Length: 153
Image (tube, rainbow, N blue to C red; front, side, top):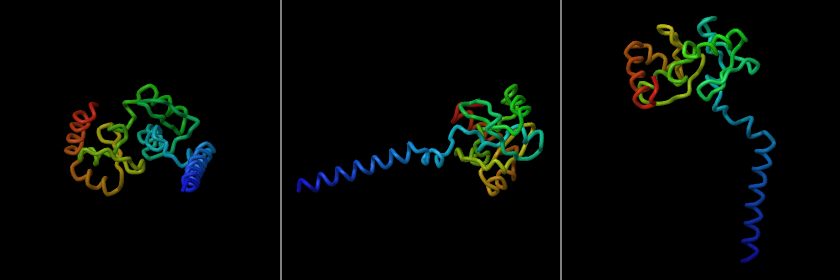
């Protein structure tokens, strides 16, 4: 019976050692989501300047709201740095439709719309279609939820 416990301890130790080796090798870090990467690395300024979703570069970054923002050009990074509120998506980049349902949903940076000079992202085409049925009403509702639930304007 005693040897059974020793064998269990060896297996547990081996499992822990295996996990630590994999984690420290960088393999686990490569697969982990970059939670501090804003809008999946897309350039927030490009929506306004280029009129399309453009992937940013790790060469042009700016820290804001506890996130790292990527930009496709130095000029876009500098514009954002000078006025982040002007370019950053509403609801800290969470889905505009989900916000109307008091939910935080990660967005698809390819599903977006600029309304009254503000960038709104959605989590899917389906969410965008629902949101599009009454954009002014949904923005009003989502803004109220964002202020009330998340203490932000």
